[in-house]
Image 1 (tube, rainbow, N blue to C red):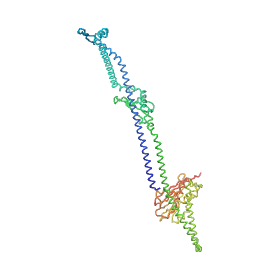
Image 2 (cartoon, rainbow, N blue to C red):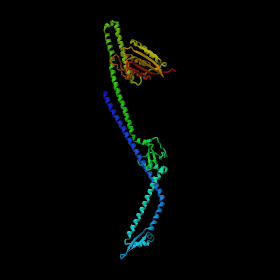
Image 3 (cartoon, rainbow, N blue to C red):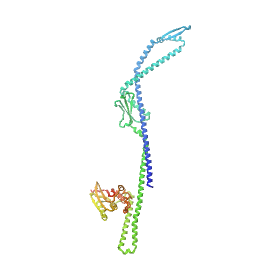
Image 4 (cartoon, one colour):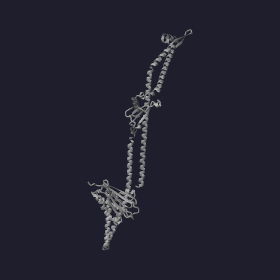
Length: 519
């Protein structure tokens, strides 16, 4: 698969995943806002109804008080009105005799009430007695209703006046029954569909807490709702009801419990996809490096095989047998190329180390300073042949380490070989090996003045099959396994290795290994 195709698929999938995440988060926020608004509206409606209930209670209380106070006055008022009507009111009627003459008779209300027999006579004298009785009864009922209405209206006016003039001057604890407030709040919340715990406070116009139920807290400001009590009072004397809901957040976020697992699974899928894409790119790069490795290995193996084949053909020539020097030279070439071929095959066999979790190592205690000196002595001739120098600075006092001597020797050999392999063309190589202690570790640094490499290459140089580009130079041979082998061995020995390099100035490899302290 082409790299461009992989990038296209990755971009499409990333866009789809992030769009899905965006929609989920937006839907969650919208649901949360709706849930919060719904809770706020239900609470506001409930507290408003509580306020109305308290106003009704206050009005009812004043009405009851006024009715008790005015009961005597009302009875006295009725008696005085009745007495006045008896003495002053009179009623006149006329009687038509058979001869056509009329006689006018005036009867007072007293006479009507004291002389029922005369009333019956006057009614008997009337030409339509039923009509007169009904009219008088309706009149009396209207008068009674009118008096009752006037009394009730006057009573309500007195209550309203008293509420306006006296209620706001009374302390809030005398105007409100706190136990009823709690009952009203619970009832109104349940009526509006909120069965949640709460606690409340009553605060007077001086911001003094008059009453506070158990559990009231001011830590969660968004969980406290305020309602003005008796809003008709003067603005300077307004009292407040404050209600605290400790489980408000649980109630609001309770509906989002379904979205959280969905969001988690989406994130897991996104992480899995990212890991898959990264692995795909790594496999793509590894495949490319393997192809380069196969091409390079074919070339590296073909060269000594061709040389050996040519030398063996020369040995068939009888004239060569007559010249000992030529014969020695040809056999030497065959020996050197065979050794070179064996070394290349050994490099390929080192790949088996990477297919195991850990290489089989024969660990033993050795002196790192002595090992460094031994390896340096074998490279002195190579360096001097190139007119270069190899210096050693052994500052480590604690130098006993536990390693596989053969593999660790190969580690130092590979690094020194790379230093000579990637030297500058016109400058003699200058190598420096140092040892020093840092805490309970020994630091072995190998520094050269070679062509160096970029920082990006220094990070990848320990990867399998990776070879640093060397421009037009074709004299540098290898499979890209040497430093990967070094990294593998040092790691398996509980150590670390890193490369510091600058292009055109050289490279420095730093190995850190734990030391064994002598007791």
